[in-house]
Image (cartoon, rainbow, N blue to C red; front, side, top):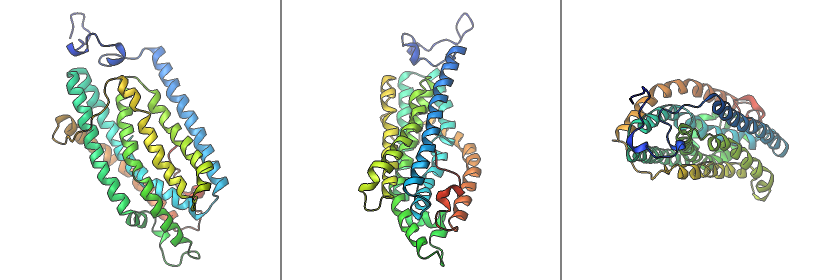
Length: 308
């Protein structure tokens, strides 16, 4: 605490640009309004593009088994995303990172970023690999109606095989979007909101582009949607990196399970995991039940829509 009663800036912060000193810095009314407008504006654009995306899908693919397979293949990694991306992980990471930034040396802040990125990335790399290899099992678990006996003229088998092939492309999206969420948490702590707010817009633009211009070149046009998800994930993560580089906090991923900051993040994640589980179980049950409907039942919006 300084002599005037205000929080003292740690020695390693003195002389840094104000944009690199979130410790003790609060947005004034004008800055708060501007930031709200920025995030709200990009979110509105994302929602509009999400509607355009759905219209494009309906126009090009209709209520077919292709859309059923795609929605299931995209929904599975998105369920895990609520745990490792914008859900429990972000809720635990941001306060720990802010605490380190306010009270620790710059080197310790960088080490937390490196260790958190390395640990999260390693865990998700394993999960993505297992998910891709065990795609048939995941589809059977989340959409048993695709392989149920007595399906409508074999469409269930077609949906199942296509969903499995799609899931092998969409599951790695979990890795990219979770690391992008980590980067977004860092940027938001420094009041840099544009990149994280723009990320969903990029997702919808890529998905629309792949549906309109890339799908016609595929032997199975629906597969282009899954490949689009994979590419969008890479771009969503990539759009964060320049902003992190300007903050001089570009991660150098290293395994950090024993690191005290990482252990604290994992501890804080536990309540969030329980909270997120309730909503995700509901989505799982919706998808499971909808998989027993006629072809097109999932794709026509019988369950929770994909992320916008």
